[in-house]
Length: 243
Image 1 (cartoon, helix red, strand yellow):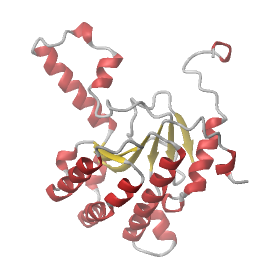
Image 2 (image 1 turned 90 degrees about the horizontal axis):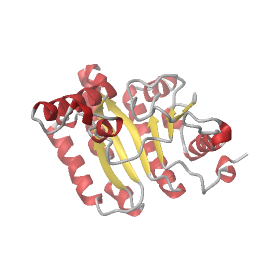
Image 3 (image 1 turned 120 degrees about the vertical axis):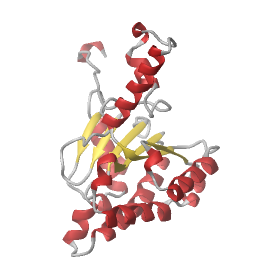
Image 4 (image 1 turned 135 degrees about the horizontal axis):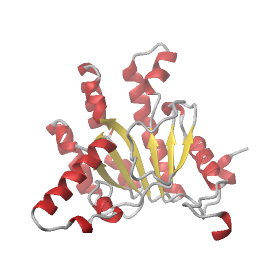
């Protein structure tokens, strides 16, 4: 069946987060260099962003480059940074009314890359459709540590008291404070782990894992994940009878 025809357009997840895994293994299967897999993966980003926007997703957050990825071979890191520069196509954002944001320890990014990203953020800031967020130089442990330091400094300065610290306050100090927590987290590529991604935010997210490598994850695969999500009962700690 076509999952796109089966999903309820009135129950689309507001926020979908994706761990885009499998680029390197996709390329290896084809006896091609890893860089080709990353290029194919960048093309999939455009496809999925457009489809998600058409379906009515409000926020799409993509795990693009983790803090741990800085430990990869320098040639691969440099190639990824160059690909990031080349793949930010503002036309895709403008024609689909998509705004653009980034989260993470972005000051570690090369200056030319950061400038290019900030340019796209500024140019798309008036768009009113879906918001596409790239998690770059990101990890949950970094994010939570960073938020803890900010809150601790405010307590030390007398701006906050210890009693002011709540779940909501911590959430306001995370770099995702401008958007709701993910309803659905998707991981491609067959691995079944969260890899230090949005750990605080995904406390009650529905998790969806599939074997499809990211370059092959196209519109129908996204709709399949949404169809699976819509079959679930989200209780948030309550019983079925309380819903």
